[in-house]
Image (cartoon, rainbow, N blue to C red):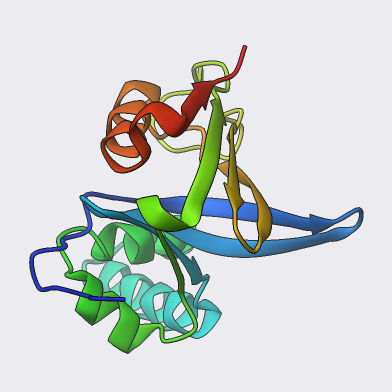
Amino acid sequence: MDASEGEVVLLACQAIERSGAFKNLELTLMITPSFIVLAPFDRAKVERIRRERAADARAQGASRFQQMWYGAQAPFAMVDGYMGMTLAQVLAELPSSRTFGRSSIQRATLTEGTQPRMGARTAVAPAHRLVLRTEAGEVSLQVDGHVQPRELRRLLGAIVGDLLDLGP
């Protein structure tokens, strides 16, 4: 695969891959102009960001609750940090990432979740469902419900074109 420097991450969000009846894998879904990237969710990096954010809040004189709240936003901060990175940088940081280009995707199906009602980035937003059928098998993902469906459709459509089915 050619991980050219022109491939910049345009969308990054949390996703869960259903790999079995009782087996889920936390991932970071990233989309560049030509690739869909599924990277492992880096727990060590989240913990480091959580400590840094809590320390920053403490230094600013925040209450204990505010420090905990600020630290709890670490997963979102980590995912947002991938925006603007090149594909080469992502693959260097997370070498076990899987990449899918148009040539490896046979069909993609996107079913949108309902729009979140709780405001910005809470855990209660219904997830979107993305299924990628590839040469190696099917990848079934639950995508963070706070991702704008129109943007997700646009970016996926740019990669897979007419192979994208929109579910009910």
